[in-house]
Length: 327
Image (cartoon, rainbow, N blue to C red; front, top):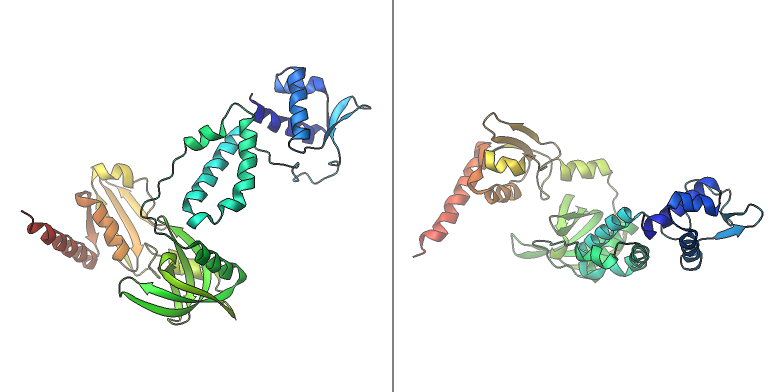
C-alpha cells in the first residue's frame, strides 16, 4: 500500500470509528509505528486535517468533526491513487478542449492538490500526465473572451446579439438569439439557441460567431425536452426533427469497428449471417451523414432512401472527375 492509499485509508478509519489507536492504524495499514506517525504528521501539518491525539482515549480522533453529516468530507482532497489518475486524465482532457486556457487557471489549485497527493505515493504525477495524450482533430480556434461572454450570457439567461458567418452562403448575418446550451461535438464548440430572426431553434458554431454582445433582454427559456427532441432526434448536429431513416450496409471487415459505435441513440442495427452489418439511423439533413458515409469508402453502401443513395453516388462521381485530369 503506497502513501496515497494510506492517506485514503486513514481518512476512512477516522470517519468510521471516531477514535483509532496506533495499534489499529499499524494493523490496518500494514506499516510500522514510525510510518504511521509520519503520515499523521503530514496530514495534520501539510494538508490541514484536524487529527489530534486524545490522551483520555489513548487514540487519535478528528477534532471539531464530531456530529457532522455522514456525507461531509474532511478538509482537503481525498481520493485513492486510481481515482487521482482518473481525475488527472479528465483535467488534462479539459485543458485540451477548452479555448485558450479559459478553465485551466480555475482548475489549477485542484490539480496541484491532486498532484501533491499523488507525489506522496509511489505514483508520479509527472509520469501520469506524461502517459496521457489527447489529440483533437479538426479543432477550430475560438476566442477566449468571446467564449466567456457567450457562456456568461447562457448562464445569466440573457439574449445575445451576434454576427454569424454562414460558411455555405459566405455571408455574415446579424442575429439576436436566446442561448439554451453549449455543446462540444467532434472537437468543436456549438451553441444551441433560439434564433429570433428565424423564429426557431438553431445550432451555431462558436468559431463562426464573428462578434457577440450581451443584451439586457432576458433569454427565452425553452423546455429541455423540447431542445433535446429538436437537436437529438436525428443524425448530426445540423439537424431538426427526424424526417427519414437511412439504411447503411457495412462490409464484414468494417463491421468489426462500426458494430461497436453509436451513430445515434435511436439507431437499429443487425448483424447479418455473412458478418455484414445493417445500420438504420434517423436523419433530417443529409449533409453530415453523407460526409460520414464517404469516410467509410467502399466498405459501406447506402440501401435507402433512394434520394440519399443517389446523392452519395453523385458526390462520388463528382469526386472522380477531380482526378480524371491527373496525368
